[in-house]
Length: 383
Ligand code: SAH
Image 1 (spheres, rainbow, N blue to C red):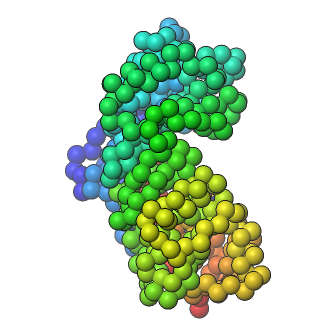
Image 2: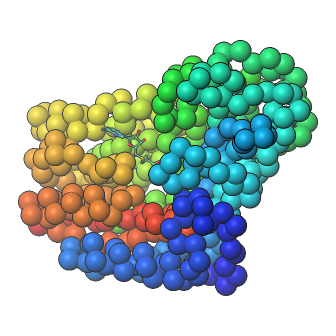
Image 3: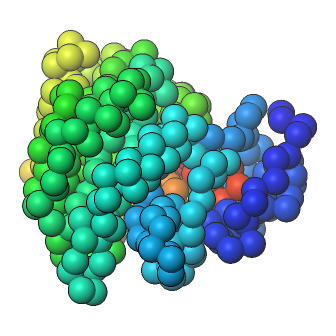
């Protein structure tokens, strides 16, 4: 475990990291206690799996752009709970290469006289930059989000950016001219490279498009998936559901140890990636569906589909009643619930454990050091 605890110069203003000022060991203890109080009644909570080096783990880095009172470009994170941008260059949880790219874009925008976008007046050009990096492959995808279709000297800008940052493997221009808190708009085009990155997890490779969900901490994700697969105890004979499957990572990691995987995910871009990922990894025993997980599993319950194991990895809001009720009709022997929010996890566990399931193991994983986020894997078995 890292003994040196770096101090963040932005912590007082930024608000992104709830645990600044504490040691990493103290944070882990606090997270362990939180899990114990929220989930301890369901089963024993195993000791949280921490990071060796809990810095610069975020492989997806976002910087919003604006100008200060003097007209100088500033870029960085929104101050927690506001729409105010704080220059957070060198943020200690973000990927360092991504930080260099964002800084280079800031300098170039100044050199080229490119104005930042003003969403109230609908003037200016540069709105956000999003950088995704492949932990194992080192690939770097840069998404430059503009508030307008007009980008004077685009070609030269890109040429200069590649000169400053020759490790960039792809550049996408995305247009977002709506007044919205969403970073990416609907129109985008790869101006350099393939328009996505490839990364590797648990021995498989994945293409990741700008809008597809990908876990932000690849080092801890491998530990998370290893735990989830171990909890499932697959023997090679099972039919498995991977619900809220993203680009297909959990199902593909499980595919070699079971008979068949059915994946369901609502984001079309992620499913597009998932289908290509299945092919590039030579996996043939997965069926992938674009659908709302609750609707899809309800149709499986109606058709009396046999499911032996269900992996479910919903977003922060947790799962919904249609999904949980269909799950209770299908009665898989095992449910492996992967959650990024222990509060909604506790709510869903209550529903499942009062309707025939026992929680057998609870494993917290620290995917988001310095912030208050906790990832949890729970094994449930039908009584
Ligand atoms: N298991 C994946 C993704 C987890 S994130 C991984 O480990 O990478 C949660 C995923 O649920 C996202 O990809 C999101 O697009 C998807 N999602 C959100 N609501 C959904 C719904 N109602 N039905 C199906 N998928 C949903």
